[in-house]
Length: 175
Image 1 (tube, one colour):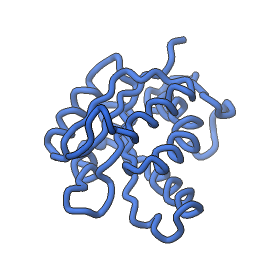
Image 2 (cartoon, one colour; image 1 turned 45 degrees about the vertical axis):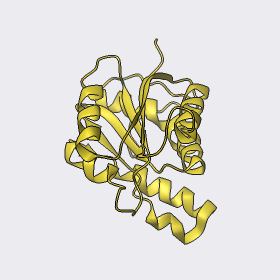
Image 3 (spheres, one colour; image 1 turned 45 degrees about the horizontal axis):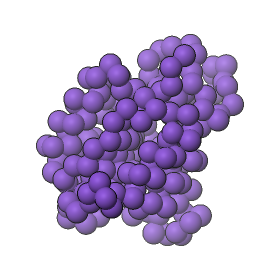
């Protein structure tokens, strides 16, 4: 069975290939969890640019999921969530809830300022993470590594899932 293929995007008006630390760490963590990074791009923080990239990636048969880092905060240029949520066919509310709970342990009440989110676009899992390296590490290790392959399998209606570090499930439960 081929590895789950994830396209990654860094949303930033200032980052370049030389200093995209969040994108680099995201790729490293995903590969360490057994995923294949199908592509990585750095996009300026313009909603239509991101929407078009997500539409294109989710239409690509070689991409199983899209993970975006950056643009989920409260600054005027942080518009990742507003850009992608209209594309969601279904929301995965538990992702943002879990991310904020885990973040609380690291940053306390500032965790409520995160708008991390996830949903399905064209049957593909799309995740939006904060841009900080600590947030990327937390999400990749604690949430994406154990759950992303399973979420993809559920979204596709397949009976077998890629369980990258997670205990296999046999149906039922909260899924």
